[in-house]
Image (cartoon, rainbow, N blue to C red; front, side):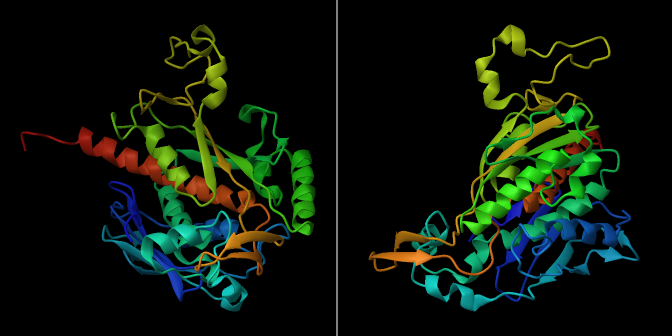
Length: 359
């Protein structure tokens, strides 16, 4: 299986399965002599971990990160940073009933057909458990970007939408509720709705909005490494993501050019930000704003028709511990992937600036 690495200079390679001994990763390209706050990394892991509230999976994992290399006396050495996260609360028996059955809208069918073998326990490599490793790398990337602020939040759960601009929101409210919505009243409605969905044995999707502030002009490498293209790839690589839009996104198609153009003022800022902070694939100094759409979790506690490995029609029902809505726990994952992309492009930008053909 290929495709386990992400990034150009700041590169993460992840390993492990949901019910294996552990998951983890190796980070290449991290600059040397950078002070790393391990506790800050653990705090990011706590935001993503299962069992943190009544509206997420009740799997109990501490998600304590064990660093194996690349750090010495609290600083990076410039060598690969290897880390491991042990799996402590996997219950593989909960998945025995799908050993020979393909769950609807899961990766079971495609993995089996592509590789001829799959780890059915918790979805194996296709499980969102893998994203814990991304949060580690993202937490490190954030620490290397102290001036840049990356804030993601839940802006929709089902038909419940946050009808405010991000400038009207108080980002300090994001971590004050289980849904991670900065509008506290709407957050209560979302939480009640998710609990109702869970009682029905069903699931629901939603949207996460991400705002990246204080990004300088010039990040992005056209033609094929445009900043927003790499952000899109990063977000679409997250489990359950079905859509990505930046700036005006699909709503922009309803506007005329005279309405949509971001007019530039004398201070080099724009009067509007329909571009979402990226023009021509390059950051323009405005806030980078994008949205990520998450589908409903595929595992339901309801009976559904499907087929088994013998192509026989069967009926199956989900068991075990699953998120009725993945969106709240995905917020730190979105932030992590965004931070990794920004840091990677910043390192590429600096590498080009420092290049001297006469040396």
